[in-house]
Image 1 (tube, rainbow, N blue to C red):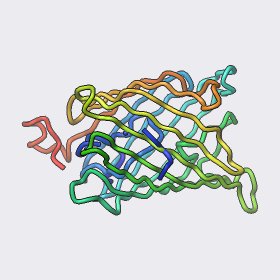
Image 2 (spheres, rainbow, N blue to C red; image 1 turned 135 degrees about the horizontal axis):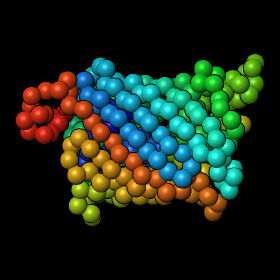
Image 3 (cartoon, rainbow, N blue to C red; image 1 turned 45 degrees about the horizontal axis):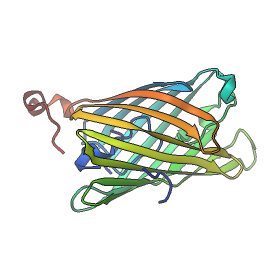
Length: 252
């Protein structure tokens, strides 16, 4: 996943497996164990994503994200490509390891920001976010809240244009075996406005090292947005440990 880890991403945790981000915008407090690699591929009606996540230090992850937007006139999307480089640090976790908080710092467009404009240089955009995870009803529900901010120096070379990002996600477990029912809402306010959007879907977690998800996304005003999307998340073992290869499990 993307790291060991208010209302802003409102629909999604059971041990470490509960908070995998997949193609959802909202993240949680989790950072994967030191030495783990995470690779995510998604493909949808509006865009395709690739994430490469590396747990370089305990509690810290470095992520490189690339996104290709398809040309879709019906949803005002042009054909362009974006990149994003960000780090995540988990600074607090509860005693049962089912909730906590982390902080993001990134270069490039914030994942919660959608624009129909052309390619934006990564080095002119900076963002930060604070994911907080709250377990509810004995881990049957996991609620992630992620407020944040971003600045785009391309829009105003002197002071830049600012935006305040928000996302909240809720995952519901123990209804469908090995599966989370997930929903979220996200968007951006102020000068870097991005309309509120939502995603709902299922995240299947059959084994420790692979997660599959299928979602549908739209805008809260009823217009089209991300549409249908599928994704896969793959975790590498910690430094290819013998224990992983023998037992086919990750130990946190």
